[in-house]
Length: 306
View 1 (cartoon, rainbow, N blue to C red):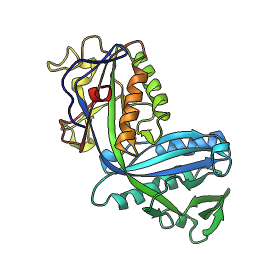
View 2 (cartoon, rainbow, N blue to C red; view 1 turned 90 degrees about the vertical axis):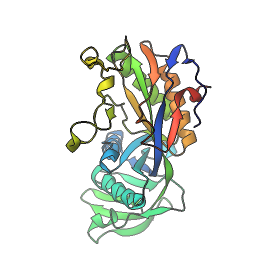
View 3 (cartoon, helix red, strand yellow; view 1 turned 60 degrees about the vertical axis):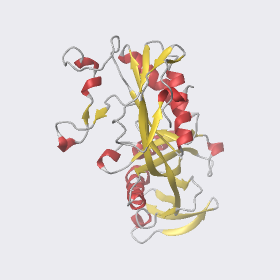
View 4 (spheres, one colour; view 1 turned 90 degrees about the horizontal axis):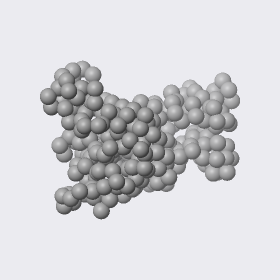
């Protein structure tokens, strides 16, 4: 985005800071997961999308939407999830590895689950090697609900997964900060934002319930990766001389979004900000960035509402 002219911007009376977030290119797979009942579906979906680990060179994932039996291929409860890796020279290979790992450990082991491809794309991953071979050579291919699937014998029947999963490029790392007067109002902002994002389509939150621990680059302890963004920790205001926490702000929850396109990502950011702006206790809306050094795309918050 081109930086908009500087002027005061408010949404529903809430100040939007003159700042930007940085987004970057990534690759994603989009999967339909189904199961026999709600308990097993939620376990598979939430386990397989847990732990955003791109900062450690791995992957992150999220839930795009939950589906009724009337909306799935096999007429069972389902959900659409996305699994992402950052772009780069070996992004395709990394995506194949990470998708296989999350499916094996998060979905295959949950009773009654099935995985279908949910992205029509000329670019595909063949999951035979990293998932199908869990059958130790006893796996076989079959047609299941008009899809070419691998049937993996397991100790509770069969695990089925569509052999070829489409993948494509998208945009990762959009974020919003909700500067609130309390933890309670911060939680309400996160809930409102999550609900709004789920209605946009094509976008996931990599921290599904929101993130309470925004990080910074260049921390003192390199062995654990990014450390706390101390300038924006309300409990440190008054204890450090360079605190950037505004007066009246006691909680700064963050939402981090990935989208199938930059257009979808910015639409979801706008929807999330609009929904949160109706929460009593929201003082202002901001975003985290690394001075323009992290991502290829700068998303200026004020431009979202002009």
